[in-house]
Length: 192
Length: 192
DNA sequence: TCCGCACGTTTAGGATTTTCAACAATGCTA
DNA sequence: TAGCATTGTTGAAAATCCTAAACGTGCGGA
Image (cartoon, rainbow over all chains, first blue to last red; front, side, top):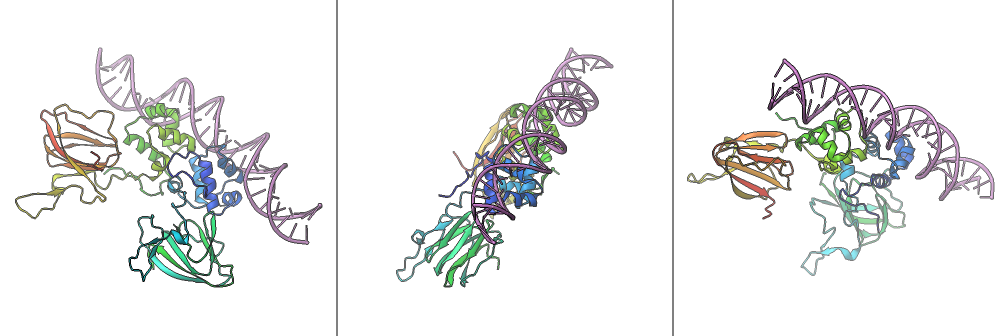
């Protein structure tokens, strides 16, 4: 469904990689060029793989995002296995029939999460300047619905739907609907 | 003691990084140039930071090592805390006075090792084509002595001396002395 | 000592990349 | 529909990188 890059180094395709990164961070060629102190033409040529940029150029461009060279070459853009989980994709881990404990993002490792209950009133919006911070983030909608944008992916989440992504990917919550949206979310590391 | 690179991305110094990598793998500028299909002059200029190589060039050069771009930018060359341990630096972990259990590389994490007893007859040599494989490797000399080369570091190990290093750093054992050398070593992961 | 060899460095010139500016394509608004 | 703004793409010139060949240095053997 989503265009994913190879996660290993088989991807010589610097252009595609740059383009995807740029789009994930919601930048145009010109805006990135302005931030990076290069021309939009250069970025265009690089993204088309018509030139192979020098390290210094690529460094300048990535600084405009910002993203380190190491991260640029290391990052696995294949949406962390699953970014989205439908309601029936959650794992039930409770043996007590009176209690349901459904686990989110069951395949993801190295978790150390902290849960939150969030309420988005109608019209609420975390803003255009997409959120970015370290760690991981996941959640599930309890009532109402919300539009979640993660990188280039966007989806309306209804009650029972959930998400799991790395927080350093820009993300945004909006509730354009008529009723409040309640969701349970979790952050890592538990920093507060 | 040993010249270590910064481990994070603060190192824009591609030249120094390349030079260190090249030396760790025991290659001359000309030899690497030949393997990579570039000229020795280009490598010289890059190592002096007098030019900022294009991605394509850097890729070609690293292919001659071989080393991926991701690894090149990610690798932490600071010698895994301690490569060498003198006899008295080993941690005694046994409470039984009749038994001594001295632990090697006590600070290193994520271990899953398999020990070996190796004997190097006089003149034995694992060869010029330096060994490289995944995982980690450690050992201690029981009798005799051996010359161990790990990356750019080289040392004569006498009975009681030990080592611990990542196996993807090229390494070589030689016993130029008159008597056999016995050492206990361990590999990870335990692949056989 | 002299020679040969291997190493890293340098320089001039050809090859590639980057800039600057103009262009086409798309979408939005009057 | 026309006008305008914004986006990505191109072409020629300037800037930068890479090659080929020569240079200087150090080391080991005759």
